[in-house]
Length: 254
Image (cartoon, rainbow, N blue to C red; front, top):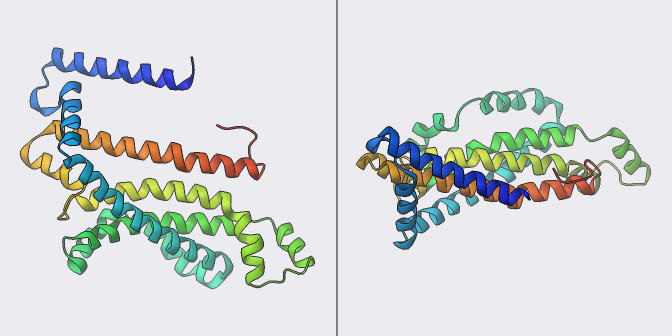
């Protein structure tokens, strides 16, 4: 039995157990049944509300993720190549990584209002520091023999060394950093959307809370989990495995 069928059977048994527990333990409205949740998912897809919310969230997270990759990689490279920056601003970035992105929400509301700019700002902050540290680590951990060999062959110490040697050598670490940044971006996105105006999964989650619709709330949670799993396994994990195999860091897929 392959992995797909193992997962499918497990999910079926999980849903069955969930439905039986709901019917026997009398949870009431506080936690929905599996059938109620699936029906809410179906209704949201059919009437288009869930699709519109998903597309709205994906648009925001793609913008924020692109910004976080650009900003984070740039900062990481600067920290790796400049000791003064690394010991000053780099120290601040490490400290900022421990601050939950939701802590910046009041500032985002004051600066941008309850709109997409605030959500994109929160999401970008949530992923940037992770990408910064990953790119810094990738550049810092390049074996010195690579740099010395390249310089012996006339690469020099300038931009040519950077894009021909350093960037390719740091790619495995950069891909891993992007995978982690994507996960952090999702967490920050939902937090920001809970208070922002517009159409998105976070707004639907807040709408479900306001009307006490736990089936709607749980269906949104499931959508977010499914989107995160699909993007991680079908995009980032595959790219990461392929890159690592090409670099000889692993011999088979994990």
